[in-house]
Image (cartoon, rainbow, N blue to C red; front, side, top):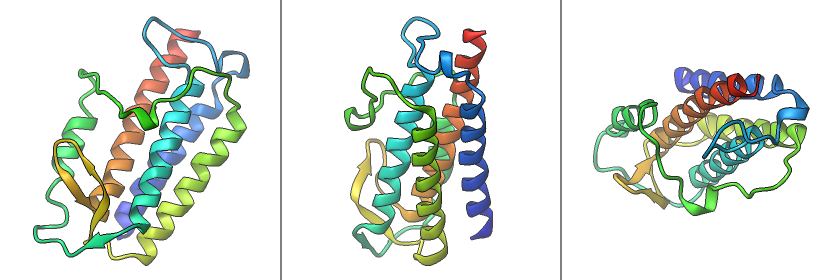
Length: 166
């Protein structure tokens, strides 16, 4: 499982790096119409990563299909930068002032938690705490890949925000 662990750490570390280079004066500025601020985007990723980290350690059942069956579909959906996706309400960030270092800390904690789950849990089990709209319940392995691709998607978005703020 080292490849998925490396992919996770690379994705979250890359997002944290991009986030750390956003000037503090710009962190809570709206870069363009209908966009989140860098702070809101980071809060969204932190909420999502933390939620998936909790899902990994929650209830599971035996998987009755290949444990990676939805990885390609998850990748195709999240890595299609031409489509705007709708976030569930519980991970939509509030419109408020965000602190960069606090969010970097939350993202680092989520990374450590998920990384630990990769090392200690059976990733072939299906998580029963939360289902994705198009797929239903997914395996722990697919959940980790969701975090990877979701984080990469928002790293791309963060780069666009940074370019607009220049």
